[in-house]
Amino acid sequence: MKAKRFGIDGKEKGTVELPKELFEAEINEHLIWEAVKSYLGNQRQGTAAAKNRAKVSGGGRKPWRQKGTGRARAGSNTSPLWPGGGVAFPPRPRDYTTRLNAKAKLRALCGALSARARDGGVTILDAPTLDEPKTKALAELIEKVGLGDRKVLWIFDRIDEKALKSARNLARVRTAESRTLHTYELMNCDSLVLTEDGLKSLTERVHAAEQNGGEGKARKARAGERVNA
Image 1 (tube, rainbow, N blue to C red):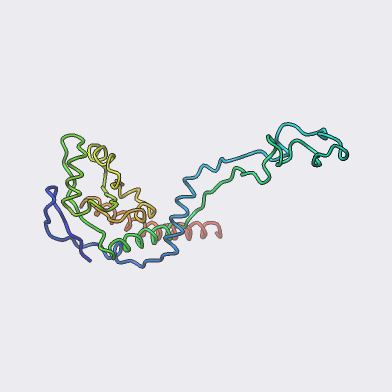
Image 2: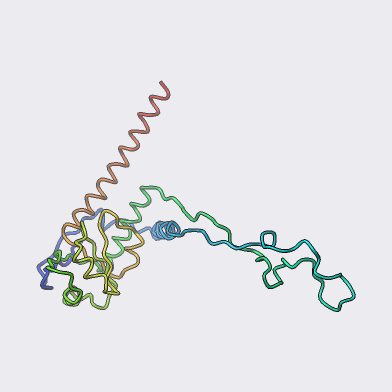
């Protein structure tokens, strides 16, 4: 699979062959959903809380006698029916963190990249060289490439501070580094724009993750041998 390559002047400079292992992988929608769900859950603080009727101040004494007043029966002023009373089913602090297997994360990432490539949403763009942060210059470049009306994720090897500040004020442009790229970011955009260094770094990251998975199994096997010995 190939992607168009553009220079910093916005003119097309040919095509770039995309790595098959990244952009022609299996697209497992459920696995991608699990990765996105895990990411969003891990961002939550989980500190929401409210008091139930046992924890609010008050109670102890019956507000008025059971019969003869003409008013509704009441046993405590901490009842959820009363102003200032407890909440019937209050939120409790909880941990929303979920873990996803490393291989599953990798498959989800490659699946999301492949989904974007299948839809023709991958573009290679030379890294911008800016003397100073300039939002207008970056907006014009995105427009020339034909992505002005799309939600763009721009992937770098290392984000240049000037490029970051230039893109920060563009509502439809987000930046990311290949070493920290997540499936959620890929699914939360319409088009991917990668620098050549970003593409190379992303490919190296995937290859390293695949190799480390094999090394991890070998380490566990060696550890098992030592224990059995």
